Image (cartoon, rainbow, N blue to C red; front, side, top):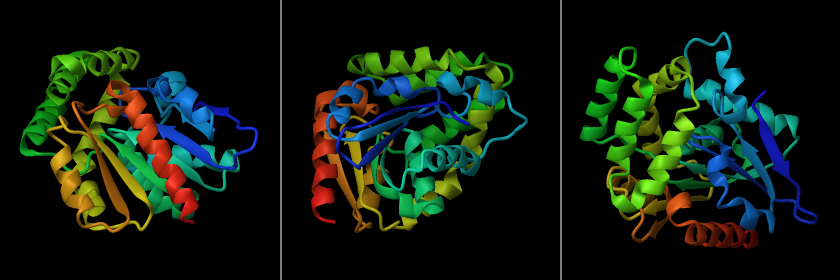
Length: 262
């Protein structure tokens, strides 16, 4: 089972589950934990091969799919007997959350998608294809540094960029290759997510400088009745790290608003 950590609230029945992106770990939520613990039960999860779930990556599964990765999370939710949770994700973690909405929709109270990935533009597709062909000959950390710089290019994005690079350095080369293999299956999955409104309250939290991923999110939100968009100014891809106070305030206010509307 994935490594997880829970923080129980004295009176609240509401759960908030945080899902990190590829190359990260649950430690990237350190700027959220204190504030969210004040109002909710909190669940932090390390995905397969990441953080304290690193040993789980050395399993007999040779090829990952988004469905298998998501089922790891479902196993934790079921083990803890959590009836429903609000799920907060960042970057590739938002795809895991959207997949949860397909597998266990009754247990997804709402989805908060930070730096959401809904479409790969031409530049990112070329980058991913190049990385896929070079993945076995180029040290993975060099590829990751390149991707991080392209996604988070500005000087003010340095903290987020460096944090994700530090976390990625903890991966094994084989583990990185397995996760990178997921990129070959992205297009049909993202096409489905853009076209299908899951009917679950969804908040997209995007930086206005997230030039690769903000445009398709805007287009999707305009078509999905269950979705809303909060754009954080002067902010790049990793919104929870670059603007943590604003991110926390926006997300907590939105969750509470939806609780009152039930």
